[in-house]
Length: 353
Image (cartoon, rainbow, N blue to C red; front, side, top):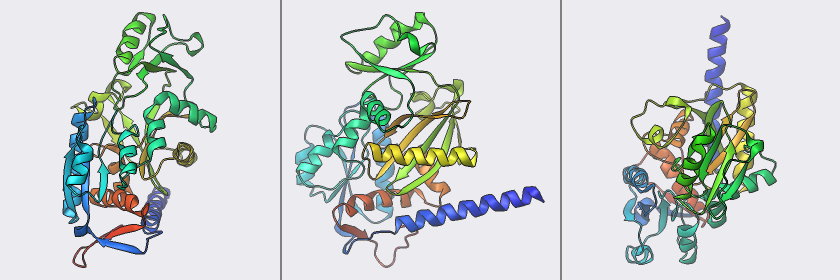
């Protein structure tokens, strides 16, 4: 009997969460309305970063979703001709599917601001802060948000060993890369030099942090909506590039099996981190949870992956949003900034927006 009550309570909780998502997704609709067919949505993807292939996958999935919603979709592989492409193709709004340097770091966002094209996701400053892991640490720490103990390293002064107060193991990562590219878990002194050399291949600055044992949980945010957490269980305990996008047997638990108290704490920290760096639109906050129950924010991702294995669509699905719903909501968020929103033709059925 007690088990039945627990299951009923959990079902009611999920229904409440789904209702809350729907309510927030329908808030603050502007007066100016455009039909989907009148919008030319440029899906910016590719680029030249180390995450180009993942960006192309994300972009392709987004294009397919937008076409199903009857938008006029214009795929754009980003290169030095981007300003000319945007003008020539008469782009109304840009859907950013870029990952890494040159896409998530505020540079493309600055261009779009200059030529007055609305775009999905965070603005220039938030994008720049979140792309720089060292700067992210500084901002979050100043806001009182827990981050792993660590320091920023410069390539001009290569340390012979990690700061002694961090102990072993430590994590070494480039400041300006995503998808765990260039990241190493260093368990002993003999591994230190190789890890540092690897990190500095991707730029002149790197971060070294105390390794936090325990669990890895990601929390998606979309404007005022904070989704349930997704726990990632990677082979060997390291959610690296191969575990994210390769054939590794990574497991995902959605919703993450958390106590109600810890779940609430992650929601609070996710909202605080999102606002501390000035995010908007969709973002993802990544946590490590120590065995003692204390959560630490590892980083924020301002253009979360949108592939079949990505965490944000997984979390949104738990709240009743299909992949197409999520993509549409992200696009509407960009249009809301400019006081316009696209309406579907009367024959279309729209669940969430």
